[in-house]
Amino acid sequence: MKKSIIAILAMVAFMVAGLMASAAWAEKTKSGEVAAVFKIDNTATFGKLTKSPVEFTHKKHAVDHKIQCTECHHVFKDKKNVWKEGDKVQKCAECHKSPKQNEGEMLSLYNAFHKNCRDCHKEAKKGPTKCDECHPKN
Image (cartoon, rainbow, N blue to C red; front, side):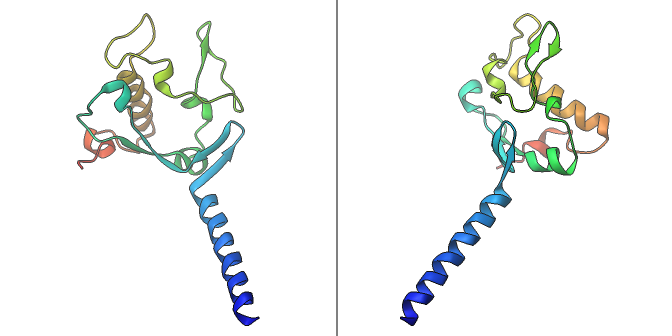
């Protein structure tokens, strides 16, 4: 009897720990659940990468720094961002397809990442702005 109670308590403790850990690792948003930290890896678009993928801290940007979702997420129609929280989040490469060339007014994937991230960090005067600060050597 004591062994079964201990086993049940251990299972409950394990489940509670698992729920707490998952809460720390993911954030619920109107657009779905997003990992607190994830790698931006576009090997499929760029082929072999010359620099390591960027580790993006979504929770730090969205919650700690209170950066609005539309600073990163966008869908442009008539030169206006019509994306709103709750809309589907697409990967950047779905629209910014070409890693090197611009298609009309569309920035290349490379330029879209660097313009959005690096320019924001420079304007805020905080955050990484040099290559190896975002792309650490493996």
